[in-house]
Length: 370
Ligand code: PLP
Image (cartoon, rainbow, N blue to C red):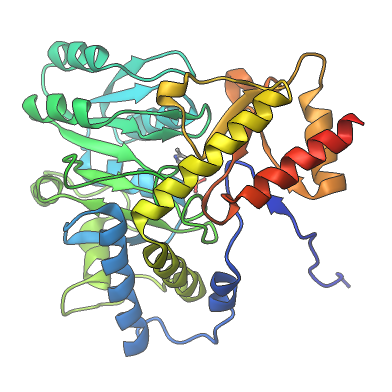
């Protein structure tokens, strides 16, 4: 006989998931209703509206994929790409690499624009790639690269992409609800995110949004979308319009939680939330630098919510990270890829973005030194 589920009360300061507000946890414990119950359909409409608000878009095709951020990523590519399409994908960390892998599986011809991990993709690099590519269908780029802590400027790139007649696809998994993400103003054609970072909802859902131009591409495909589950032609009637036809059984409890988390974000106000992330980030930087940590990313394009740091000389990152978790119940992330074993990734996202969190982490680090 298995024992009952029991986990420690952790303080989540890694690359996600982040801490979740008690009201969001409570929402998950709401008794189930059917996924076609009129009350649930109304909730879906409200979620859709709040997704539009938080993405700062009026895009009609805005809703939530019933699967994590990677499925949002895949949804964008499988719907927009057909075999033989040429695409440009920017790679300066793990998640740009994942986009390449998905686009290749769609049969696309991928042109990579690469920058060293820890730096941005420059406007000139994009300009050059667009000039070299015969007929780019889209350019895809990560707004907040969680593997390194780099914040990618998007506006200046978007203009170039559209002048070349391509669509702009953006990974906003880590930026969403933690820093400005203006989908309409920045002319982003397809955007996907996750729920477990600055939104502070449980992982497992992926809000997405498609512009009219992206919908036009979708509607004029010559071949069917390779994935049945992610085919937006089919899913969209479940999330909008008068049909509300069964497509799949929505994860009802997770949508309850998402609804509450989105309400909390809008109650705080997007601008206030962005400001909070900046303020707490500044305190974290000054305290960590005081302890001898060094930041990987240049301050001009450093993410406020995902801080990649080298530990002071002579410290074994794995040993200290384990002790933080085992003794202090604080989770921070280790490095990925080229930075595995070399850096920590400290998340201050959503509910985990408070001065208390910074003080708890810094207190534990000081305590360990004694
Ligand atoms: N893109 C970025 C930038 C991410 O940070 C992540 C997850 O950390 C993903 C995509 C994939 O999201 P998920 O792990 O929810 O599938």
